[in-house]
Length: 438
Ligand code: ATP
Image 1 (spheres, protein in one colour):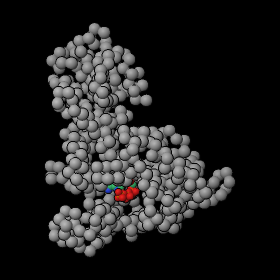
Image 2 (cartoon, helix red, strand yellow; image 1 turned 90 degrees about the vertical axis):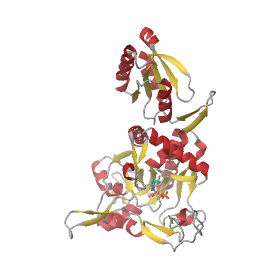
Image 3 (spheres, helix red, strand yellow; image 1 turned 180 degrees about the vertical axis):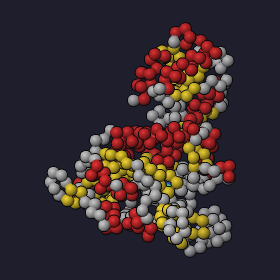
Image 4 (cartoon, helix red, strand yellow; image 1 turned 135 degrees about the horizontal axis):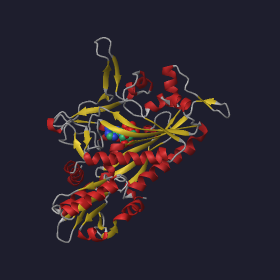
């Protein structure tokens, strides 16, 4: 990465730490590579990010159901899926500076990008995280943390069909943790060792695969575009023939234009009947679907949309980060994040923190609105600092309770992006916010 590119990521990392959005995990012990924690603001943002996905893909669809599978599964799952054999990345080490790299991610894999040194021969490393179940030596079961969240959907397929009233075509959605012992975790949340994935597995007849593949490709891109500011920073990348799994007719990634180039955010995969076939074979259970109307029996085919929750959230932060030169020469930093995703919809301040009547009125407003919206309350002293904080965490509106409020029950509401102010009646804030959030 060039200095400028580093700069942009560094600014986000620093803002995330300063404002309680994301912290390096175990920082007091010097940190641990590839693991991050969401702070008080980041947890709210991440929950909203996931809720929007759930709303769009489960709540608003009669043809989708949700599951929440466990992280540890029977070890055979990962043999059946092919991960034990094939979930491996190649690593090389520089003979001079001893830094390690994945050659497939280097622009020039003939020499070390840090010092120009020669590389050792590439060696393959399986990136599944291993663990043992049980406490007695000799009786432990060796297994893995799930390397991709979607496998539990295939494991539960039969139970879902038998217990719900789903009929093909239908989809199963899941948001859950995945673990990969990445050789080179890097670029903040982009490549970590523990992360969340959001997955849709859409089950259909083989003959309808093309139709549903195109449908989901369009749907998922449109969803991201509706939430990112810069629509042209999103694109599809079609996988080349030699990148395709043998069972895939085609594959597309939805990519985001990061400071270090286009990078995958979500994969739209043609999984065919591969997964259900593998699990049928390894478990000796027949995972076929019986069509209740036609009485046909077949293994459904699958279109998968598999995205990274943390990775896409990082891209959303990159998309939202703004610096604005003000007339007084200062630079204002703000996160132009969609209000549906922001931690708070409204921040409430009393104009002066040492005026009890204003603090009480502001508190009352907080109590009134917080039963319906995520709102913040700040009665610290400096109003400029309060705005700066809310701008940097992306709060779209700030309401100030002043002396006029005590007379006519109105507050000033300031807009994060334009800094313009309007006077709104307290009784009308709820409707005002509802309109803005629609
Ligand atoms: P990459 O090529 O970047 O390693 P992948 O093709 O292996 O990704 P998938 O297995 O398709 O990724 O996983 C689906 C999604 O999960 C990716 O599009 C990405 O958003 C997210 N993801 C994968 N690996 C990581 C990781 N190490 N850290 C954060 N998110 C990840």
